Length: 113
Image (tube, rainbow, N blue to C red):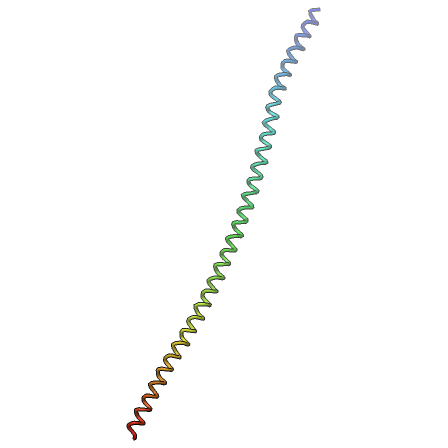
């Protein structure tokens, strides 16, 4: 009977140890689940950050291209305005010299008669 009592006590101790191990296993499993959830969140965040970086890079490229195109457009517009102003001034100078030449011819004609 004492052998049976010792075995029952040993069995009770083993069951108590097993219960303690199960209690530590459940929180450890919960920690693993939480860790996995955190890792998934970090991966999603990294993916989102990578996508945002790519979008910003694309946007920067588009803005740079638009800026270059607008500079080319502004330069060509400025050049066209410069040509127009030169033509306008050339016309005014030609008209002025024509009037002057007419006056000179009229004066010379008046002197000759």
